[in-house]
Length: 220
Ligand code: PNS
Image 1 (cartoon, helix red, strand yellow):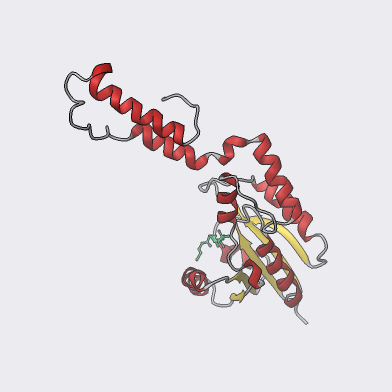
Image 2: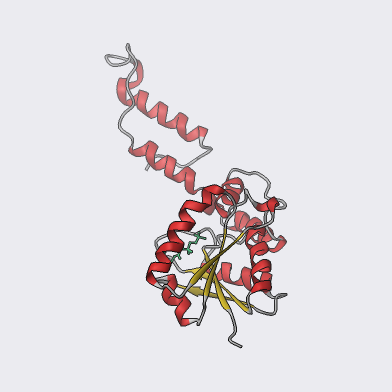
C-alpha cells in the first residue's frame, strides 16, 4: 500500500509546545510527517533557520516517522516534490479559521490532489503562538510551560547573548520617535522660551520617550 506522506509547514520561530503537540498527533495518522520550515528572507526571524532546524530535529527525534526540512517558494510545489498527499495545519480557535481556510482553498486551487488536514492541539495550547511567546520574552515575562525545555533554554541563551534581538519593537518605536514630525508646542513656549524654544521642547519630549523605552541610545 502507498505510504501517506504529510507536510507540516510553518515558520516555527520558535517551535512551541503547541507545535510539538500537533507533530505528535500528525505522526500517529500519517506514515511519514515532514516538518517543513519556510525559508523566508523577507520576514525577520528571532531564531535563524539553522537554529530552528536544529531545535526541531532534536524535538522530533523520538518520533520514528518525522523528519525536518526547509523549503522556499510555493508550498504546493514543495509538497509535490516530497510525494506528499496532505498538508497538516493546526487550528486553535475560530480566529485561525479564516486565514487557514483561505490558504487551504488557494492551495487546493493550485494543487487539487493535495488535501489540507486540520487538527486541534490540546486545549491547553489553544491560546499559544510563537508571536505571543516572543512578545512575552521581549517584555520580560515568563514563558514557562509554553515551550519545550530545549527551546526555553535556547531562548534564554539568545536573550543573554543577543539582547538586541529582543529590542526590535523598541527600535521601531525609537525610529518613529526620531523621525516623527515635531510635536505641537504648548502655548507660551513658542516665542522666547528659555533654552531654545521649540527645538528644546521637542528634544525634551524625545528624551522622555527614550527614557520611557529604557533606551540609552542617543538620537541618530
Ligand atoms: O507558521 P506560519 O507562519 O503560519 O506558516 C505559514 C506558511 C509557511 C504555511 C505559509 O506562509 C506558506 O505556505 N508559505 C509558502 C508560500 C506559499 O505557498 N504561499 C501560498 C499559500 S496559499
